[in-house]
Length: 493
Image 1: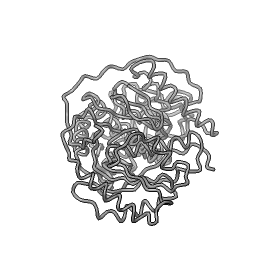
Image 2: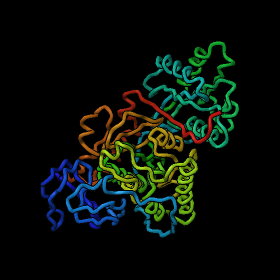
Image 3: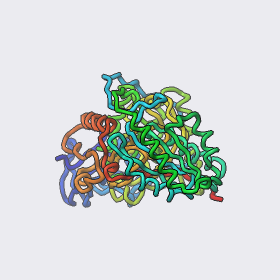
Image 4: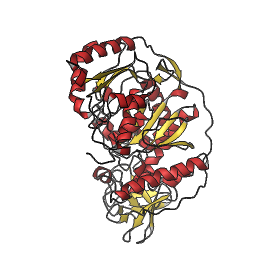
């Protein structure tokens, strides 16, 4: 088993792949280094002396500046390293992307809907228009489980606190997310439950939904019903009957859309899990499929790498706007644009936002960026898309689903039980997490430490995703978890 890694030849730090003791000697190239501190798994140590004020280099890029002299073999972290990020950055388009070679077509077993869209699940979704009817939706979900049969994967309600007392763009975002979920092809049938007096009432929401199949989407306004739960159950029964008409059939991976997200990272995330997802993304795109990368604040510090992979100057300009708009969102709320990673991230070895971002963007592989999506936009172009959404796990994963992702790949070094509206594959960066939380983790990338390449593991992950798209439940689905969260950006009346 490898004990440490220098990710790029130009790096001046290496990363411990297992806990290393003070006084131990490590050999990197022709250099023998005695460790001057204990180095925890995922944490960095200097492979040469780094003077105060000089860059700390990882992934062949600066992840910050040394705040004091750092000796060869010393631990490098938040106590002697600070971010280089600031609010003012000038971007220039320097294209470096190359088109991926096309690879052999692959297929999965999906559900072809009446409108031509494809789903990977045959579910019944209950969507409240407003938080006031959340408990009604939950009661209907509970009492409707008796209708599930072999043709239906689940019946689930998506609770949320919005749909009223919102203004402007904030309310528009809620309507977009709800309408996108109503139209999502993983749902064979949808019951929309409204109250009747809310801002985003059923009548308003129908304008956002557009044309719909009346057999697939049913509506219930609680204020107009004598017994809303009884009436809802009758509608669920009808939707289940409609859902039974769909059977899995062979579908090209060209129609598969996969969201890419990470959270609760550690120092191994950018070495194991995220590069594996990047290899998967390149492989799916080489077969004509689509991936979506989001969590814009975790692009800060690595955004130039993405910008230079934009397929043309229009996409570059849109990416610059994506990044700058999110920075302005931070500044308009009196916050810095370089907030340090979470306590869990730092405990796992990530020191600065650049450290996090350079590891985070590994999920995007090497494909060209084909399009940039605003929050609530639906994917239109195949290939790698960038989506505007925050780093929050539930909000970002919901945004991916609402933009059309059939499945979300979620890498983590810390672990989390959460789910999203679509199958959420939990991918561990280290094998200890995979072993400890077998009820959470679906795929272990810690095995890269055992000499398996990210490319080879990406092929195995691709096979796992095909199985998932064809009906294999992931751990959160087995547990019965289905979450959703909407990005709150405005005032509450």
